Length: 345
Ligand SMILES: NC(=O)c1ccc[n+]([C@@H]2O[C@H](COP(=O)([O-])OP(=O)(O)OC[C@H]3O[C@@H](n4cnc5c(N)ncnc54)[C@H](O)[C@@H]3O)[C@@H](O)[C@H]2O)c1
Ligand SMILES: [Zn+2]
Image 1 (tube, rainbow, N blue to C red):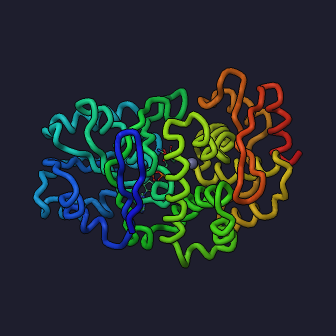
Image 2: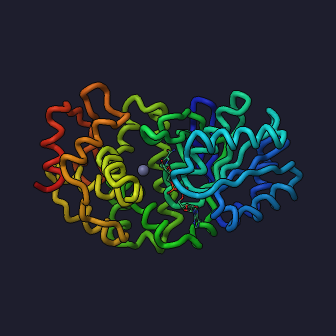
Image 3: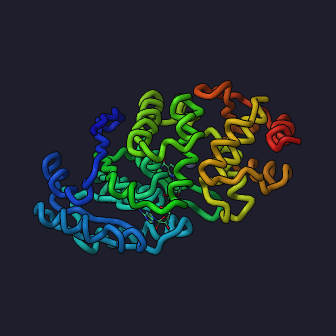
């Protein structure tokens, strides 16, 4: 299946289907005139799929170079970024080369930013290997690394030239990664699709996973095309993320992103005064926790460093009903009350 996304820097395709990593070389050769391809992955993904992709690229006639970094969010930083850029230079990647990011959202964000910076920008092919990266990180062109002062503080918009979503990878994925990605899929359902939400709530999505992934990609792509640089509607994609990021931060990043987004959505439902039964069901079905582990004061303090706030104004995403959400501007003075309601107090 192929979907086309429009971006400021041109259209790109998102392909989904079985065997796309094995066929990556031929697919890329048929669409672009790159000479070298620099494959970036973390150690875990390299061991699983690195050889498959490098072999495919080499067979299709590309000069293949690569770098591997240790897995984990703590690697998404300026030091690893510089390591990657230096490896690209050392291995002789030219202006007619491209970077292929093979991995989860960490690799996609890091690789996307390296591609944006190297020689003032070379194309980037995104090959997501986590469900979260398939439905979210690989689409939309946001790239970044973290600093010790906060997540994603050094970044750029750099849309991919192609996204390859391999169904075989989806079918082999460990349960924990499916649960984490499910949180973002539940988010898509709450934002725009009652039928998708129902599949997430009942767990039926697992029997129809690639179609549900495509539906999420379609929802994200539609919002991103309306507002690529997040002046308005793209903020809707932050549903569950303002409080979710605060919960991640309070926990010292020990609460995984999907868990935190689930808790953030639960808070948004409560803050909006909606019945929380549906969202609780959806979280439980997908192995996501429903107990919020941080106090109101901790969440409030962590929200103070939210990079999306403008002065004292926070833009919250609140659900109106399943399938529709709205942006609500809230002054810092009202935030403690919203958080208190969100915690069900
Ligand atoms: N750019 C965006 O729009 C956007 C959107 C959402 C999230 N993100 C970013 O994405 C990151 C989170 O993504 P993630 O959860 O994919 O993180 P990740 O890349 O760290 O992957 C999670 C773990 O799964 C492992 N892994 C990857 N694929 C695997 C597979 N197929 N089988 C087994 N293990 C595998 C990785 O080695 C890693 O240890 C965060 O840094 C977040 O900020 C970016
Ligand atoms: Zn997210």
